[in-house]
Each structure stands twice: as C-alpha cells, then as structure tokens.
Length: 351
Image (tube, rainbow, N blue to C red):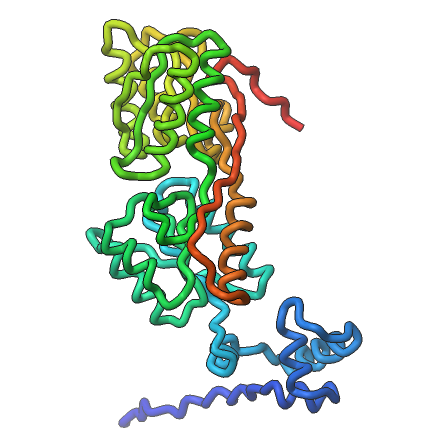
C-alpha cells in the first residue's frame, strides 16, 4: 500500500510588529513623545515616559535603531578598530568603551583585521556602516593610514597612542611621565643597574615610556639602562629575561614597556634560576592588567587610568558632533605606580 509522506507543515502564526505610532495611540501621546521616551537624556516628563514605556511593554514594542538612524542620519554606533585583542589590556578597554557608550544610548561596532590584512582596509569599512566616529587602538600607523584618519568624514580618535605630526586627535596615558616615575622609583629605592624591555619598534607607547625612563635614569645619575626588545609579547618578555640574565652583570631592576612582557620577564627569571624576584631583581610593568595582581605574579606596575581615558575620548567625540570642528588635540592623562611584591612590597590585604 503506497504511503503518502507529504504532510502539511503548519505555518507559524505571523508575529504582529507594532510601530511607534501604535505605541503613541495606546499611550495617548504623540509619536515624538515615544521617540523621546526611548532616547537617553531626552527632555520628557517622567509621567509621560512611564506611560509610553508601559504601553510599549504591553504591545511588545522595541525601537528599531537602524530605522531611526535612517530618519535622523545618526547611526548611534561608534567603530572601534582594535588590532591587539590578544593583549588582556584591550578586552578591558573594549568592555569599558561598550558600557560607557551604552550609557549614552550608543553601541560599539568592533573591527579587527584578519591575518595579514592591513589596518588601512578597516577604516573605509567602518565608515561605510555610517558610524558616528572611529576610535583606533593600533600600536603603529602607516603614513597612508595617518592621512586617511586626518581626512576621514567622521571624527577619528587615537586611543592609547599618539602621532608626532598632530594631524589626528589622541587620548593617551602620560607615558613619558610614567617612565620617568618608574626610573625615580628605582633610584630612590637603591636600584643601580636598570634595564628596559621595549615593545614594538615605532609604537608611540613604547617610545615615550622609554624616553621618560631614560630621562629619569640620567637625572638620578644612574648608568643608561640596558635595552632589549620584547615585541609587546609574553614570549618576548621571557626571551628578554634570558638575554639580561646571561650578561656578566645582570640588571637589578627591569622595566618592561607593558605588563604582558613583564609577566614573561618574571617567568623567564624563574626559568633561568639563580636569581630571585625581588631579592636580586625588581620587575615593573605598565598597564595594570588583571593578571598583574595575581599572587603568582604580584607585579608592580604603572596603572593606566582606563575610565578617565575613555571619558576623554568620548568627550572629544561628543564635541566633534556638537561644535564647530576644532584642530586635532592630544590629551595626556596621568597614571600612577601600583607597588606589589615584584619590587619588595607586601602582598595587598584582601578586603
């Protein structure tokens, strides 16, 4: 007996999608009042806003930010071009940016390059999505990328790096002052053979931290620091430690240009053996990532004030939206030294 396998599949009931006009009728207000109710910091009476939100909840209405963007010509999105997602400092930056923008009713659109993809290709991609601004965290920028940033049709802000040409606005920790403070710290605590582990060649953060460190060391009448490179990586820090400890007179204080390298230096010293931290060698990093405070590292480091740096970045973006375009500016935000066990300080007490 033949079997008929054809079966009618019941159609899913069509979901009714309500509009702002439907909410306005249900709440007895104008459509513009509905719009203001869903716009952060918009001017609207509390009672009116409550009535609108209650009507929207009953109808299951949610505003469509893309549709609103087409009407207002404001996408509500800020692009974040990030090339160093493997460095724990930057996921923290991303999370903090996302929270701060959400408080302003905006969203982050993250762009990261594929392997061997030039950063230059990301900027036009981001702009094509109608973003209101672009924040770039790349360690280095080519001359072509610098020109593209300067001529972009939307505000572009460099975060945690600067350009000597001054053609693009930037917000950065005061890296030079940080390097100088670390040198003074070493000198005041009796360290006499300093060393510096550099990051990527050409990275403004590493260059400025090194510049301040050298200036502080010389001001303290200490010998110029021994210099090795670590490429801003953990493995680079381990290799740097091996090079430094192989010298006839190893340093007694090492400043690594970021925390990831400093953690590599600490593990490198342990691997080589013979000398201990902090009894024989002090190690200091820069950033204050979460792992720096882990008991196995207990790293003294120079803390970057991420919240304030992001607040300054958003201030520049806001001013670009509401004011006559100003000349590019560089904002340097002071950080502070956090002492831990890698320089002899006791472990912090658990609150």
